[in-house]
Length: 72
Image (tube, rainbow, N blue to C red; front, top):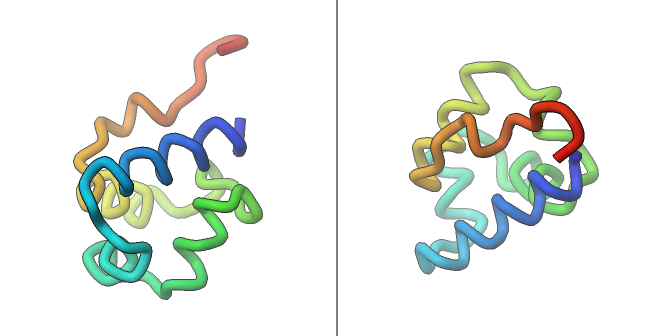
């Protein structure tokens, strides 16, 4: 699941024409933390609810898109 979420984060950031630092700054997190999410090193599902929502807002993603139900 971490790979799927990492792929979604990177694809959406690219679609919006944003850099990793722009997403991190808008989300209020360190660049390295966002990079770990995008690389799948730190599972996005393990971050706090508040950080997850901030990243989703910065990337204009519905949080439900990142939640895996069953065996997606």
